[in-house]
Amino acid sequence: MTSEPAAGLLTLRSAAGKWVVAAAVLGSGPEITCADLTEDFAEETFTGQIRSLAMLGEMERDAIARALEHSGGHQQRAADQLGISKRTLQRKIKSYGLVTERAVMVAR
Image 1 (cartoon, rainbow, N blue to C red):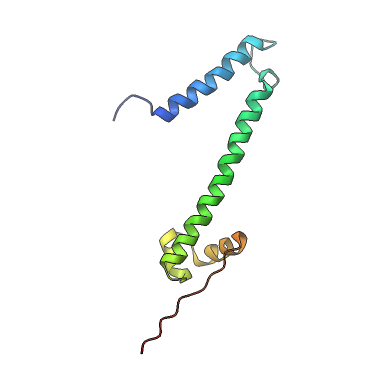
Image 2 (tube, rainbow, N blue to C red):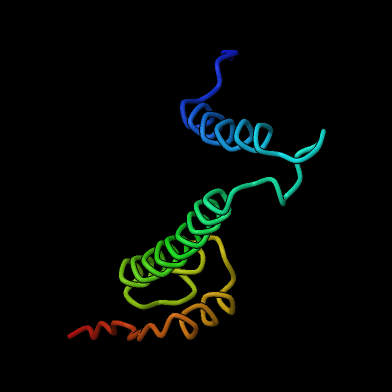
């Protein structure tokens, strides 16, 4: 194992450090409080978190759609592939408004 932090962690530390320094310089007392943080900090932080949550939902929806397509619409197989229960998959299908049709093969 290396002792170097991951590049993403360095970026996070740099961004957080910028806000901490600003709060320390502009702060009114010996401790940094929420009131010392700038509006930009709150806006940037919360906007980024909301954007991440929106992307997470899209990623989950896409994963469910792919699993259903891969399984030919068979919900139990799709649920097994996703590592969730069939009932959880059914609730997510309903919540995302996905339409499923099970492919039926007829032997001749």
